[in-house]
Image 1: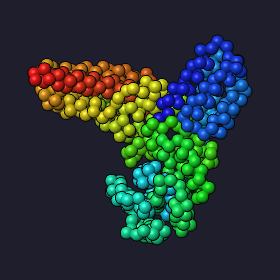
Image 2: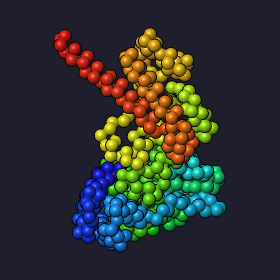
Image 3: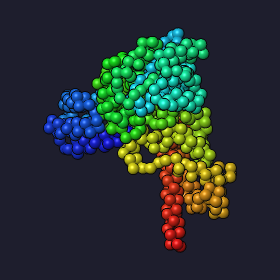
Image 4: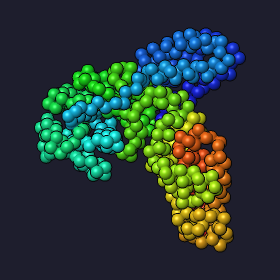
Length: 475
């Protein structure tokens, strides 16, 4: 997310930090770099022009010229202006009483509207609501089946009819929701490949028939300015209450996220950051600005960790760390929790300064699978005490896991170093971060173990190549 924009911003800030003396001319040069970076990220031209003007004025007003750390002051100013540009924070869904609260989703075909409907329903369940998903996209083939399947995966009710009348389906779904005690209705409406009069008329008719309390536009962030332009047109025809940007985990240049609020005046409510049904985040402009500037997003990281790590369990793990009795089973529990949080790479991206280092790093689930195979081939005693693993045990474990004995040895050595590091950390170093994670989560140790997993994977790949070459030679 925003890797290219982050790199360009950092280059601008480095150019300021490297100067012994900062002048208005230097600031002007820096703003040219910022302007170019934003335009290349497909940010709306008028938005870029106003943004650069505001930053330049704030920079001079903040006496950056007299500052001992001009680069740092500029980062703070740009961060504040980015937050203003995308803000204010408005992630609230306004629920009515008595219910049900009706939320209508609109958008072009291919923007991820149906999947977003399911993600939003899952979010509502996590916040104590009983939503009803409504399959009111009667234009796209298999849209109804897709929503039903997603509903089954989430154990959330889906209302559908064998009908071609979207108004009738919407009205009947509200009656059904009242009868079944649903307090929120999420309407998945029809989209088109482009905005046309028929599409807008149908949406307006559905909105008029059921008077939704919230209308959210679902936009594909990867389409850049096209997403912003479509948001503007939708807002002019059906009064929007907010925008949900999808596919921000892809090759999104950032233009839509930085432009849509300024152009439409409507807040970004949520962002989609993956294909999984829990990959929907509330949108916080300050956190997004921090990510764009390469400063990570520790608050979101902590929130995700606290969702996955049980307090009592993590307190037990902390005691084990302090005693140095942290075992392989404990480690696997942490790795599985990290997997649920979105994966190691996504988590490391949220740590300050880690984003740029991960650009060319390939971290998939294969490393964890290899490591799980090795650990599951150990006896319970070996998992608790890796010191028991001698050469004969390594051979047995490697045979069971389908790896080489030195792969087992390498993993054990890395684990023991990580265990020693965690024992030291539990004594007080990085205490603030440790307390935020309730003591049971250590990204540094997890990163070390994933590194060991990558080495196993790389060695395995090299061996496959050698075997293939050997077969060729024998032929």
